[in-house]
Image 1 (tube, one colour):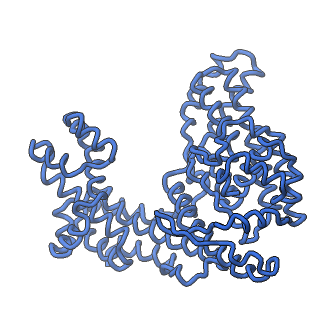
Image 2: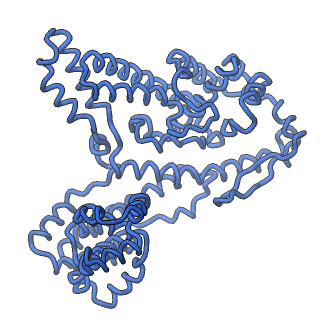
Image 3: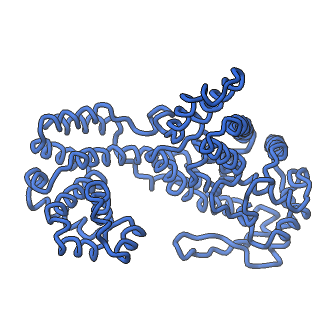
Length: 475
């Protein structure tokens, strides 16, 4: 076995085997299920890395056929030929290596390519027919797609076998380069925070700081200006691509599948005893067109009766909610842009002020105006600290009862929310839910303590009704 295959197998052995997540009861083993999903993605990322570094070396068709054998190559080719992955890779190849080809397409074909971010068959046919794109180029893109597929879907043995056989087709320099990449490979979740984020404004801030003494003559103001630029460079961040993919997966494939099992279990365990079984026929199950199901009460009499039932929080939860709602009031969060229907197109929800002040700081940097930058940086710093306090209160005081498992985790879709406030998705989701509640109470002039003492009380229900039936289904 070659050096590359050995290095890969060593990394793979440290991770262990893929865990079958079907063994976990999602209603009671949430932690085990999520941790297993995360573990499996680590294995998947290592395998994809193995394929990607071979792709980066531009392994051509002849090299791959020599390594895999013609039969194995053709089997793999059949799996990827005509797929969106292959056509997307053609797009990426042309974008990187032959960008001039896009300029030679007519407006209709350009629009097709730009909207799809791939190169459909009709465009490939045109480029080949006009001798703009050679068959060798397409064959080599196909080879790269096959390598990528084996990395994504192959077993440990299949990937090790591919690395072992392809290594024989590489130059010594290529083998050494790939070996170093394997030796230094570390999963995105095991890397320090600095590796999980990018600083898109650092270059601009550094350039402004370099010329700061020319722009600002007063020593005290110069110091404030340089500190403002340093803060902006450090805190205007975006997640790295790998970190974003991990967190997005955690929301959609780890947490989302738990909601229905938890709800169903809670209902089954309590329906016969809650109010002596008065609401045991409360829910009807409905199928969603996109798959999955949801539960709804279709009997208006039962629904109205249920709405009048008193609901009580624990004293610890009440304390946390009072602190959070008071802090939101102090921060005047309802004065910032937010869609009152409860559906926020930017997916920032409770982080609306943070994102607004972040945007103001970006605009100030673009203006290159020292006064604007100093003011905007100070505002953003204060807002950041306010959110740290909110996050801390929510984490320490709100209930972690799985029956209260939050569904509103959409803020992970917005890369503009710093990862400081998205690493703990459950806490971020609780803040989002409380923010929507706070917005409702404020807009309908309901006292916050009325909600805290009885979240199903008449004043709150009236407020929700006024906002529009169905607008706040997530509350």
